[in-house]
Length: 66
Image (cartoon, rainbow, N blue to C red; front, side, top):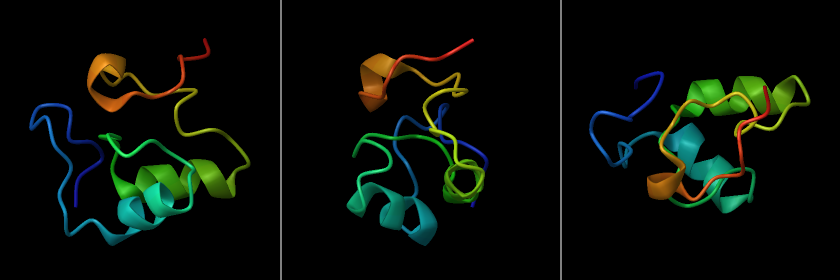
């Protein structure tokens, strides 16, 4: 598992934590963050999209909050 999959353009289908976050609606289906990062943000009460530097045109995520 990786911190993100920005360079690959598609997330690892074996990233179970990311898959769970997608199924629960925490992140969009095209999310390219790693599952551990997503879950850490969720556990801290933050939106995973808020600090993500990923390509929104690929992932379909919410805008970044600076």
